[in-house]
Image 1: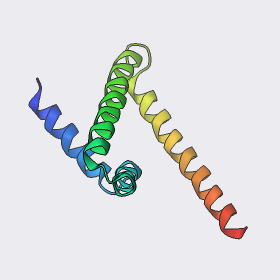
Image 2 (image 1 turned 135 degrees about the vertical axis):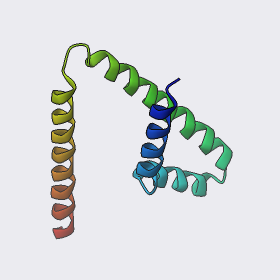
Image 3 (image 1 turned 90 degrees about the vertical axis):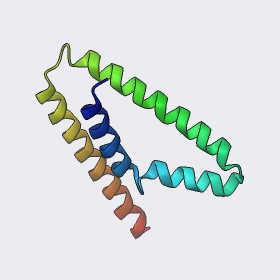
Image 4 (image 1 turned 120 degrees about the vertical axis):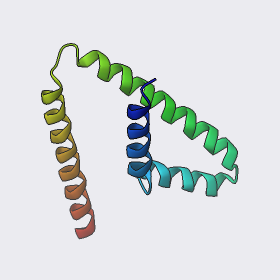
Length: 95
């Protein structure tokens, strides 16, 4: 195992997820259900599977598409989603 990559990945994702919608959803579910261990296990399994899927799909795609183009596509997708969310937010605030 490459411990440098492990540490970098862990640190980046740990900081990125603090206050993220996933964490807020978990907090909300734990409050509503009053079953924090069930929420923890369910959330953990979901995150593990999503990360596993992303890791293997990302490894597979890089065999066919250069990382440079994947980075550009990811940046554009984040931008598009951000604009869509902003548009929906502004539209719903005027209603």
